[in-house]
Image 1: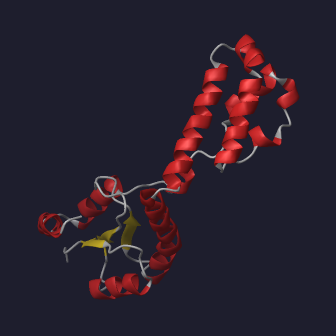
Image 2: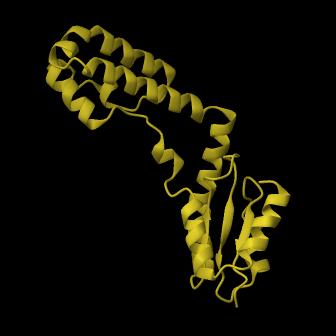
Length: 192
């Protein structure tokens, strides 16, 4: 986030109550870990339908396991294509849905290995590791940590909220001592 935008946000937030600031931060911070949003497996419902259409694939380790490489995705796609007739006979759309699921997993895998994906996943890991430390350090405060979904740059960190008497410079120093992967944007309530 650009410095002038940060300054404008801080200037506006100076007029907000602590509760309002916390509410706004809760609205813009990513709630779910990115790694949990990535597809790495075929869904249970698809697998159930697959098993009905092709009972011999019920215990297929490939289709029921993690598809976390291009080679495994290619193999899964080949198995699906090899069983096209049975899948289409069972449910016309099942074949296409399985191929679409493999495509989605492939897209997620490509993204996770991209520069942007690696950056977001590194930030996500740091936030998961750091959040409990921050809460245990200042349990009386309401301090939120996360990525801003409103920012065009997905590689960002916002740390803010209501310090409830804690010193901002102590929190900022603690954050920096924990080596965040990118420079965080700090936004704390100035309400006293």
